[in-house]
Length: 407
Image (cartoon, rainbow, N blue to C red; front, side, top):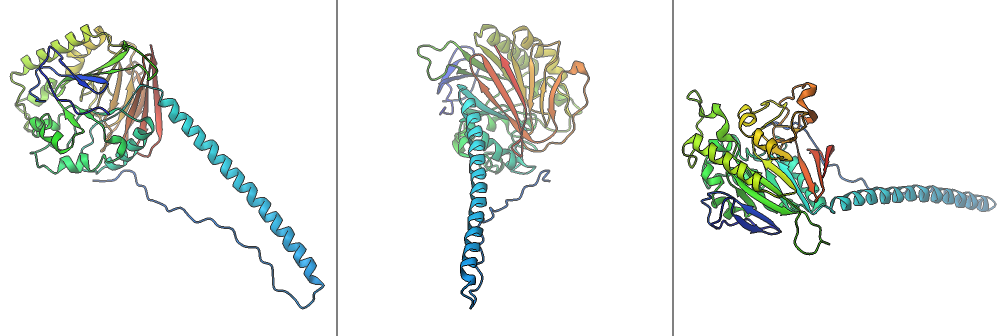
């Protein structure tokens, strides 16, 4: 299992080994409501067989052989019928379980499996715990390597201090499945910026729960060679995590009534220019088989927020020029897959970790909406050197949509 990274001085996008992956970050200061679905547990009913009634013995002994014969025939018929039912049940269960097992085994052939969830931190409310339960189930089946959080980790206004109970109540006490006890690689969302951002990207939370890792921007690298591969692996994926909140103009407006924690940003334009330059440089020099960029805000979306125009203007041209395969985001509380004819990038939204049902607009053909779900859920991603598969899951465990890409 990968361990939470500890930073070391390095060159641009300096690298620190994390299990079989590599994690790096530029200029890091690191050292080292209402339930919308309802379920009710129904106990299994006991199943038994009623004993056949033999009847009371009469005084007429002549009737006994007939009664005994009738009883024997009845018991034989009952036994035969029961045997048929049991056989059908057993073979039906076997076929069902075998099919499920084959499906799981098929997914485990991918060298890399992970989950993506966003906009989740509501102390278990708005079905956050239901989503978490299904994440644990899918995570167990896929034997995931890690979880990606695409921001808005703690509502409504981030964390207020190191002892804020929201960290335990929204994270540690919610994502309790064994399969989710793995690194969580996170970015900041706009709601996180309304609290103590330095706390989220510092070491204090990692000391409370060693799964937690969050920073403004960083690079994660993971090889895609299977267990049978020998020698150096030349096939790998690189994930470029970026800090999207500072791009949005309205958060900096004098009319903005909310207070954002911009500590550590410095001069806004300088910060944005530096981030764009490093993203451009990192993607340009990358020899990765797959390139995936991860941020909180949307680039393309038909959800409540829609496109983030600042991201379309400043970030999208870089992604298209340098042939990024996919942009993963949250912000809109839905699940989406968009692939437009005018762009080479696949846009995938997974911002449905808790409060959802905020509406999806009916797009035009040119908007490229391949799939949209206005409800709670998450996605699972499985990757190999030439294949990428994404499944979209809802809070009840249903698989809603599948995206497959090949190289």
